[in-house]
Image (cartoon, rainbow, N blue to C red; front, side, top):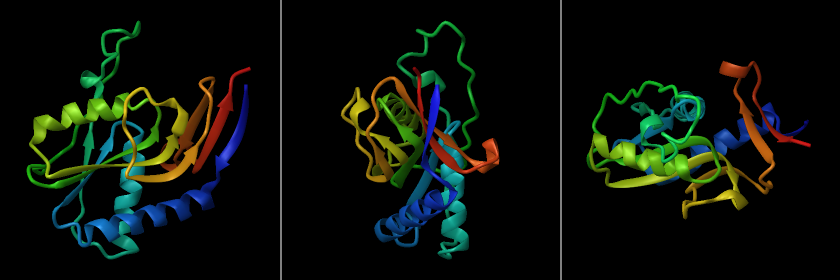
Length: 180
């Protein structure tokens, strides 16, 4: 197994600022917009973006939630080991809002599909957008594309993209792991 660094901490910081600016361009003051990080890994990116929007760009009222999709996955009953659910934390209505779903890596599209199903339990949004840090371009099983992407990466199926956040992994970095 070998690791190649795709993004270092400085590159991730630059990408986060670019994504924040793109969100501001499309959502102005966020008065009708909510950010939803997908549990577990998308929440690190969502938290980081919300913090950046508040502290660096003075967006005052960011509605930030965390959405667990465990029981909405199409492979829920197909795994040998039982899946462990995370908590959903949405203390606002999504009815009529613009929702930005946030995840770290877009791979097959199945997690995003599950998030769309899970989101229906919380109301009918006016619009749904997708923001990802890494878009694995050649891996899609479903016709799902991001509206905002940090970096597009061409990887083959035996390669894995691993995002590390300093809050959880003691460093900010994105690695490409190859199984030999």
